[in-house]
Image 1 (cartoon, rainbow, N blue to C red):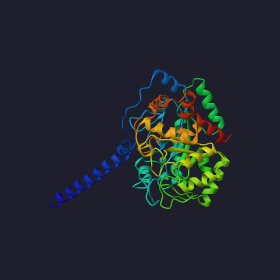
Image 2: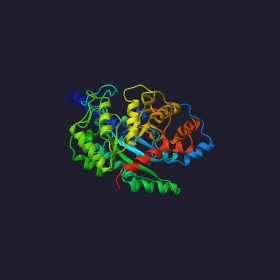
Image 3: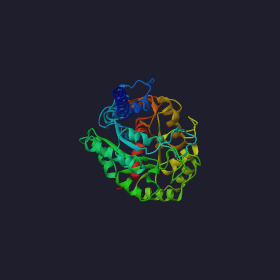
Image 4: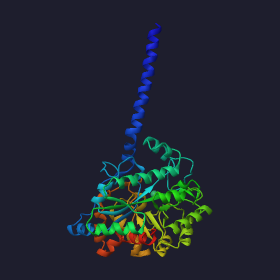
Length: 395
Ligand SMILES: [Zn+2]
């Protein structure tokens, strides 16, 4: 009866191998897309009807969005995807002139707005599931460099329809080309959390060389450079953080206050000699959660000549409507002036939103309905952010 037993062992072994193989295939091929579909959703909402006149206005704008996490996901930016919130075809549909693409390199399990430690990380599993290069599995710096490479590659393969923005000259060329009627979209690389420096000041060089021209100091946990508004201690800048801040200003890397603790925000506003931005978020006056800006902070950003990008997801504006977006914009305008209001979608940032980037004319319509003049709409939809970039990017 020995052969029967051996046969069963063989069948059992084969079954296990088969199950593991199917599991692995699912993990590496189905899971990444599935995870993204679950995390970056669009829940359709009633959008204002865009009139022909507003569409014409929208088509004449230079729209700028300060924050998207699309680089984190396993997709080709150049292909129209059936999931998530943006890609180049949808940016073109939404007449976006410049998209700032952020790199998320670490995010804690059970992520919440109140308190997170740095002990766990979801991005490691994502990096493995997406079969990213091995060097990105264990290094936060390498993850960001890989995200920058993805953006570079997309621009290289786009035949000139996606261009990288790294200097004032790049920005001027982009706007001149668009004004001349060329279909071209700019992409600027940014970082969400300077824990990707891995505590080493010299790594700023590597990120700068990779194209980083905007950086938020923290994401969801306190790190080597600053306290996070969602961290445990929520402290100010560290010594390394102060060095990094000065070096960023010197080089023309825009300081992004998003996710920094209120203590760190106060300190950076105090140190700032150039405009600073809040790339994505909301205001406490219309949505009272600790991730949002107080009126004092709004005035502080305005006093540097910077801008505040209002997001479209529930936790930033306490709703998913264009009305809630413009309510927050109205408040920024009231406390910081018209020149401080801007857009920061957080598209593809594991957010659930009411529209994707192809439908941005709905926000233009809401601004028009609210009584903003054409030149004011142009400033809010992108002109203000272009001004800040023009003042801060390197020559
Ligand atoms: Zn964020």
